[in-house]
Amino acid sequence: MKSFLLLVISIFLFSCSNNDNEKPEIKTLDLSVMEYPQKWQLFKMSSSMPGSEITGEDMEYQEYYLFKKNNTFIKTRIEDGIEISFEGSFSIVNQNNEQGFLLEFNEENRLIGNCSNKPEEYLYLDKDNEILLNNWWACDGPGLFYEQVAID
Image 1 (cartoon, one colour):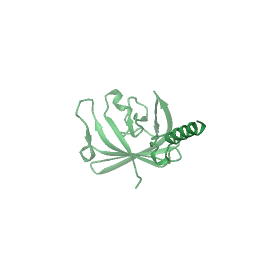
Image 2: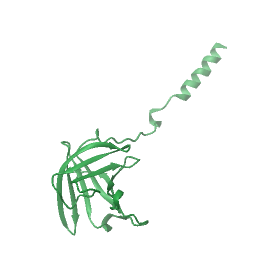
Image 3: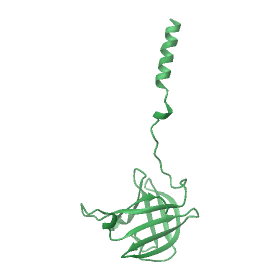
Image 4: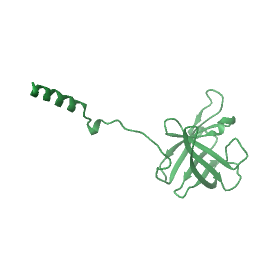
C-alpha cells in the first residue's frame, strides 16, 4: 500500500512539474528599467473619424523620438524632405494606471502635440505595453502611434 501511495504521489509531482521549455513567455515593458537609448518611430496616425487611419509613406510626415540614458530626448520630424529636430528632457511617470514619458521641450516649437500651451507632451504605453501613444487625441488632436525600432 505504501509503495502504491508513493507511486501515485511521484506521478502527481512529476506531472505537475514545469518543463523550462514550456513556460509561457512573460511579456512586460517597464520604461524605467529598459535599456537606453530607445527609438520610437511613428507608424500610424488617425483622426476621430472612423476609418481614418493612415500608415507608412501615406502619412503626412515621418517622425520619431530618441530617448537617451541621461533622461534627454530628441524629437525629429521629416516632412516634404525637410528634417527638423527639437530636444528636451523626460521623466517616467504613471498616470491613470498607465506608464509613460512626460517630455519637457527646451523651447516652444511646432512639433509639440498636446492639449495645453505648455512646451510638453505625454506619451504612454498601450494596454499591451507595446505601442507608445500620444495623448493629444484627448482634445481632438490626431492619434499618433509609435513602435520601438532598432537604432540605425
